[in-house]
Image (cartoon, rainbow, N blue to C red; front, side, top):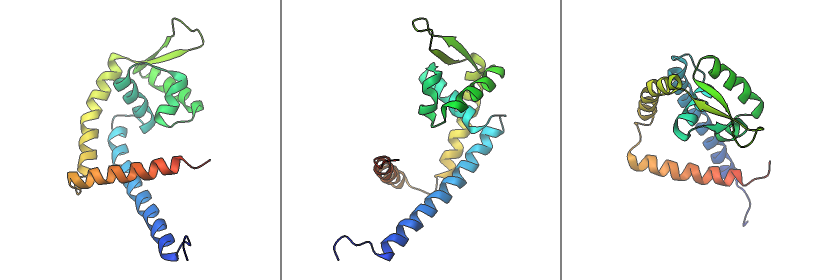
Length: 152
């Protein structure tokens, strides 16, 4: 028998995948509702949040940090620049590199959104105790790291 996969094990993994996917979708829907209330989409919010917390970033590296295709970054940065939330700044030492930097207006909007955003996330995870949250974090990290070890 040894390493044979049973139908019960397979079914349990599939059920976990479905439950995790549905929970993720429900949580994201709730979080996106707050962000959209400020006239922003989740990708725009992710870029501004990155710049707010990590400072100016080379345009070429933003996509990898927020899991967005590089072709979409230019579009998102253009939209945020038109809204006055960020500006492009040329790298003084390398003409090929352009940085995105958050503006004061961008900082204001992130500061306005971030507290209700964080509070909504806290509300969504309220059914879990602190210990359960810690366990969930550990388990999901373990699965995520394992999944990332597979070849694409």
